[in-house]
Image 1 (tube, rainbow, N blue to C red):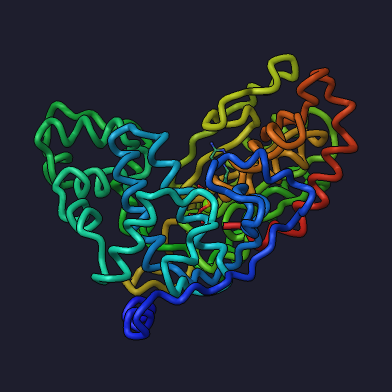
Image 2 (tube, rainbow, N blue to C red):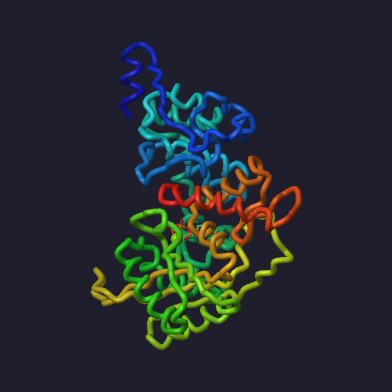
Length: 390
Ligand code: DCT
Ligand code: MG
């Protein structure tokens, strides 16, 4: 990396002003989550307030920080992991590559540890701790196992602790009973671990739309998840279904699944019926999945493949919220995960509201109706950012 050598050849590091402004100057910087975030800092500590394009100018640093985050997640250390994810997110929002360490000085969410990593990468081209992790047997095995659909960190760890290191060993271990999801995960591993392109996502939209309209002509389908944010590739394709009448959201997904079955394009389905209950809102746990009717599918997408086959398997998620919850569900399913997390944090700390995929509540009164105009305002503002959030 050149900025370090360049700045050192001049005898001292050259401070460069980062021209990056928060989206909403009304945010009170004194309540920033990070104590080092100073009022003059131009970058917001909230991901939902940072304009972030697809163009990551600091990939060399963010890749390293994300390895550190992932390794901590594999160890169950969600808190410290989040700190690295936040730091990576801040760097992704910068309009240009960092040129010297001083540029990180007023950035939020970048503590001494992160700065030391950035410095090491700048000087040596890599970070020794990251290299160590990348070569670590536990990390490599956890990464491999958790890349299988249906295998979470707990199962991956269990297999690792039993001395298993490869898929072959897992599949030949008689005491391991794979569930239906994991079986499909191994069966279609090659296909579903290949990124899905935007062209493939568009082809799937036509298939999903056709099936949805066939079972309910007044329903509509929108693409959500990473593709809604403008990504060119994703690990799956997420769709949200809007039904105009109460109760239709509960029956539409089973009917759509039947339709896929009759077309012989259904390779796997896991239908989760709605557990939505207004009285139990709001949920306080971010990680908790929402309560809407949804399904996790693997579909056959027709088209010539490198393998010589005329189809490939693709992971598809469908969610069908009740109409009056649609805006919240669409916002929640648009991601990214950190954007959503910070949006909730922003709502809570800066606006005194509780937000999740179902609802926006006034924290003081717990009165949902009072929050409606606020929700419209938030959603309108956020719609502008939806294509730029990573
Ligand atoms: N989501 C959510 N609640 C969760 C998990 C995810 O509301 N417990 C939202 C956030 C993103 C969205 O669902 C889609 O999830 P993914 O498909 O995992 O993310 P993505 O951004 O679409 O990433 P990719 O492009 O890899 O599919
Ligand atoms: Mg997705």
